[in-house]
Amino acid sequence: MYTETALFDLLLPDDSRSLKQKRSYVRPILAALRKYEVAVAEVGALDLHGRAEVGVAVVAADPGQARRVIDTCEHHMAGRPEIELLSVRRRLHGDDD
Image (tube, rainbow, N blue to C red; front, side, top):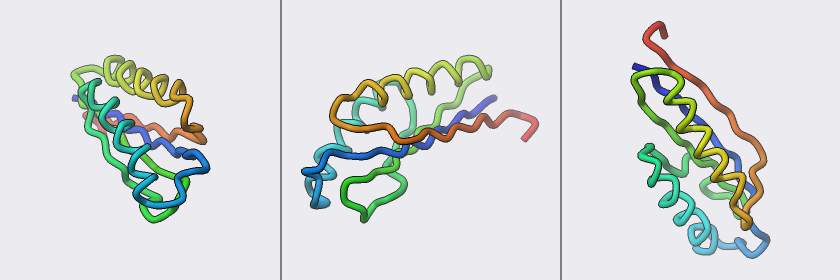
């Protein structure tokens, strides 16, 4: 069993100056990522306006499958025009960990 995780650091549009407006950007992102059958949540920068950290995790039988799912999530995030993907931190956990 393999688990791959990714942490996406996002820059949100300038009009996300309130937490309510920030949530209006983050919620659709989380919903879209869930379509890939991953666990996803906003995990950091919770009180910062204009920034968000989104964590994604997937469990798979082989590392290649886990990597492909996270690759798909990363491409989805990079393709969203309303946000800027600042960084991605990924980690693969296997049976040996």
